[in-house]
Structures are given as C-alpha cells and as structure tokens.
Amino acid sequence: MNLSAFEGFELPGKFLLQKIVVSPAELIDPLGRPALAKSVIQGRNITITLVVQSEEEQSVSIYHEMLEALTVAFDEPPNSVMLMNEADFEQAGWEAHRKFGFASPDTVLPFLKGYGFYE
Image (cartoon, rainbow, N blue to C red; front, side):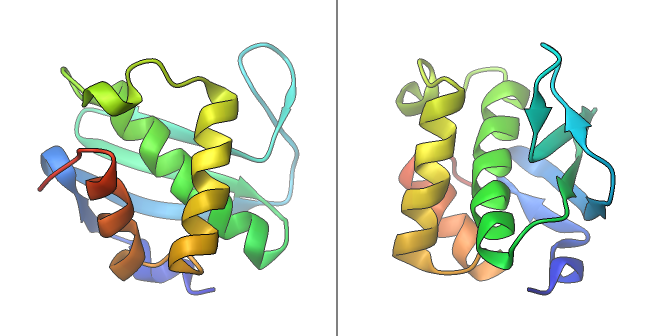
C-alpha cells in the first residue's frame, strides 16, 4: 500500500492530511490500552501514525482514523457520526475496506462523503 500517496491530501473542511507514518513501536491510547493507530490534529493539519501491521489492517485503520479525526476536528460534524464510539469507527473502517478496497486518496473521499463530510 502506498502511504506516501496521502501526503498533503486535502480532506473535507479544508483539513490537510500531512502524512501517514508507520511506527515500529507499540502505540498506547489515552486510557493506557494498546492501539493500532492514532491521529494528531494540529490546527487544520492531521497526521496519522500506524503500528506495523498487515496491509489490510492498515487500510482499515486509515479509514477509521480519517473518519474519527474529522469527527473530532469539525466544529459541527455531521449527525451521522455524532454518537459514534471507538467500536463504531472500527466497524466503519472494516465496512469501507470491504466496500471500497484498500484505502487510497480515491477511495477515502467517497467513504467520508457517505457520512456527510463534504469538500
């Protein structure tokens, strides 16, 4: 999977996905649990970090993290995501991977549009 294709990728709401990086180290979420990915939002810039995993898991994590990051970053996210929790974002990532295939700039935008995020 070509993660560098996402560098500088424009997301809905004038957000910019600066890059996706792969970390050889384990990630820990704010509750101290192991995590497969994390997003950092700084202003209108988003960086996603993934742990080393299969390409399929990376794809699911990209869909998941983009949806979750935009939900957090938007001042008024779409109603379709307002009540989503971590398990819902994970399920959405798996559904997107099954429907659209491996995450790419061409597949992520229709996925996000399906949840009400528009450019």
